[in-house]
Image (cartoon, rainbow, N blue to C red; front, side, top):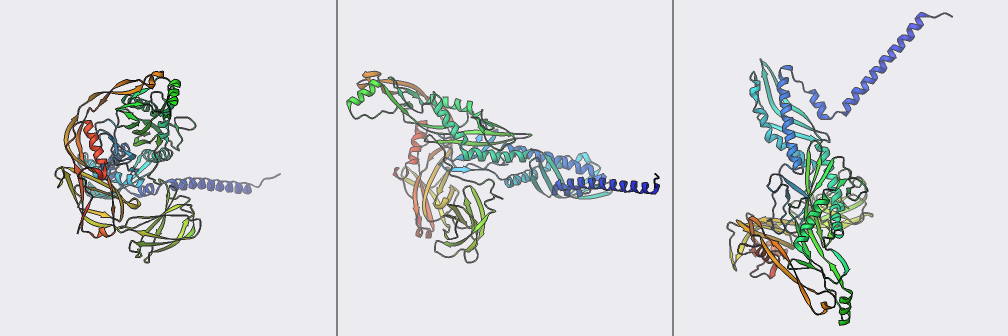
Length: 639
């Protein structure tokens, strides 16, 4: 059989060409894949052409800006996603010594903000930053500290570097990277070769974004599920050192030192809080979608508040059982029945740390009220953008918006809340009218808002087509003044500081201080909390009180005879730089007609500076007494 040499060569050529095409296709695929996987930021950076003469200067700036950025991320991570922590706007109650931040070492060396806490006047606050807030803080940090990169130009004596005086910074945080873009008019001249560098692109390798997103997911879990509150209640039930609720057949009436119970509870919390971890189906595990290493901690030196009742002179003892006859009372003493039921109100902080290349910290305030986990009064949707609910708008719904004179209001922003998800709906037109589709939801909440008006809220079920009218109260501004009632006489504020917090209809809130001269009000009822403080260094001396209580004697003798049981109680022993000297907590109503006044004057009672813990407690009782305290005056209007 013969072979045609030309045919053999042709086949080889085809195979070679086919092989080249396949290799080219594979290379093209990898190149395209690499291009697609790169971010817009990385593709922009690659387009930047820097000549060899300028490259050393550009790389210096990239390295320096990268270090500045990482320093900023370190600070922000240690402060719960904040570059600066907001000032606490309420006076600190030494009996409930909490602010909006946890002083980790009790020396202001490391302060971590609470993402959830309750203020001095009982208002729950959520303070969880968004990624946009974090990026803005990081932008500001880089701007404020980038000048450190211009202090070492002595390294480039042969270069003429100019134009780095004005710049703008833009950052983008991803799970494992942070992109930094610095816009400037940087010009570098080297041996008559000049190049303008309009943008500097920096990529910082860090897990900050992963830590932040994990922190959000973890916080959402523990906040919504009351994880640590439920564990605290378990501790109250399970530990014998902590009297809680039980009936005991014993001829001896037990008593507990309240102070000792508090010390024991602190130790128990410290022991158990450190055992929490991320996991599933174990007692101390938190079931949350978190990939970072997580650590929980509480130490007994941190702020702590507890109230246990019933108590008598700081001694806890059982309730008296009620019996209707001498025979029943005799039976009780023969059977030796003691009923123990104590009510706990507790607040304490937990520090949560998520770790990778950085440590991300935030604090959480655990709250127990009347032996129950807190009821979440504040809701926040942490991931409503792109929610399936918000993307499923199918039910036609009509909205009309009016002011309190029933005049139509235009350009009112409308949102719809279903469970913990808030969906953006749209805005009313020039006739105060909006017809659009809503997500279907039973007992959802329509929220209408416009600048200069108090939000209007309405419960609505959107499983059928509805028409809804919402009335927004106009916020009326009045001149504002504070007067202090000192020994029955009204006087001006001198060197005192004043904090007033008001909660009105539809969650309308007002915060004022001694510098405020205008107040915005809407008609309705207000709950007012106010404190007057002054800077004054006082020392509350430590005292040991010998407290005794009377309890029935054992057995039948308990029908007639009682005996004393005594404990020693330590109180006081702390210093104050800022002390509360007065204030009033009360309610008052604002009528629509009163908002036509020119001015409103608030009167707050003040007293002598307290010098003992007992005097501090008495002062708080006066503040909380409302309108029944001596010389109290409700706000007055002037035309």
